[in-house]
Length: 230
Image (cartoon, rainbow, N blue to C red; front, side, top):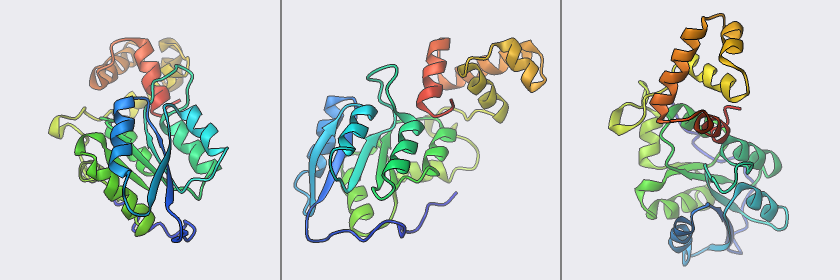
C-alpha cells in the first residue's frame, strides 16, 4: 500500500515562531532520547513530555501545540488510553495537529490500521533517534508525511510479516475470534455467532495467541485493547 504524498489538509504553519512539540511515552529513557534528538533543532522546541495517553489529552486541552509525537502502546495503567483508541481521539479532537507515532509493534495488521488512521507519520523505535529529526522536518517544514524505512517496508509487504523476524499475520477468522473474545464473548458464544464449532474457535484463538506470543487470556485482552480491536 502507498502513503499519502502531502499533508495538504493541514493549515499553513506559522514560520515566525518555533514549532511546539508534545511527546508521550511511558518509558523515561525513551522520552529522554526523543527530547535529546529534537532539542536544538532550529525551528522546533520540545516543551512538554508526558507518560500516558490520558496525560497527553489533558495537556493538549490546556495549551497549543504544533506537533504530537507519541508512543502507540503505553502500559502505565490498565484503564489508560493508548493504541488506536488514543489516535482516534487525537484526530477527532485536534484534527489540525499532526501526529507522529513511534512504536515497536510487530503485528502488520495493526500497523496498517495505524497508517490508515490519519497519522502524519510512523517511526520504528529501533531505527535510531535521527529518525525523529527527519520526521519532524518532513511533517512540519516540508508538509509531507513520513514513514521510516522499516515501516515503509512492512506497509508495502504483500505477504504478512513472517520475514525479518516479525510475527506472522493473523487470518481474518483468527482476528475476529480474538476480537470477540476480548469483547467478553465465551468460546461457545463466538462459535454460535460465527457458525463454527467450539473446537474450531478454540483452535483459532490458540493459534492467534501463539502467533502474537501471548500466554494468558489477560494478555490477549490487553493486546486487543492496546491495538484497537475492542
